Image 1 (cartoon, rainbow, N blue to C red):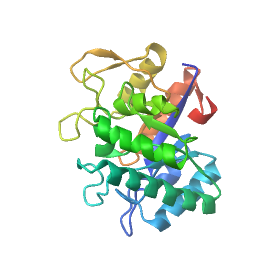
Image 2: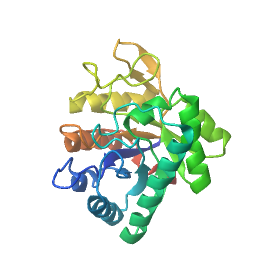
Image 3: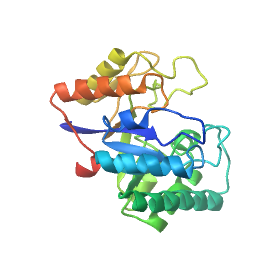
Image 4: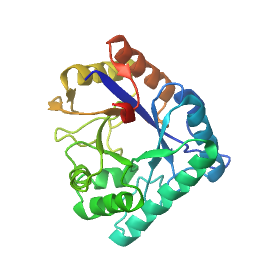
Length: 254
């Protein structure tokens, strides 16, 4: 690995409720996964986030979700495939319109929360997500977990699939993420997180929650914008990777 993209989930404030520090995060990351209103984000906040992304020259992705504002998109929904496809198209289209006004454009799609985790194994829902992206704009990249159903289907349909690693999340030995309902699922020590990402970049491995080393190939690394000390974690990861000689740049330039 000679270059790597850093991404964060942004635009998740809603009404009078502020979540995360988008302005500071946009000074550190190279890609912004911007909410689309289904799990978080109201139109005014989304437009503000997109304008900040444009000013920082940060690539924008549509972070699509189940229609689950109350659960922040982290509750699993068994939606019919046709409904899920339509929901994805609707969300990307809305963000594309706001991005145009903000002076930028949507370059990729990254599913959020429960949808992200479900399409690792659920072929039906993975196919519904891929169908939506292909139907709307096959030039859009799709970000997801390595060795997943959605990745396999995306590549079969000619989409660019971008494998992702998570800086602040714990992994199981099978390469999937530890559920947020379990202790230790979210990591908080910025130095430990930075060291994990350095090892990932140098050796292509990461230590799972049970101590097993697992092989992991990634083109982009995510730091969640709603994690406590998200800015400090993102800065530590960026500085450590840059000090090791890696170029920090959006994956669209890889």
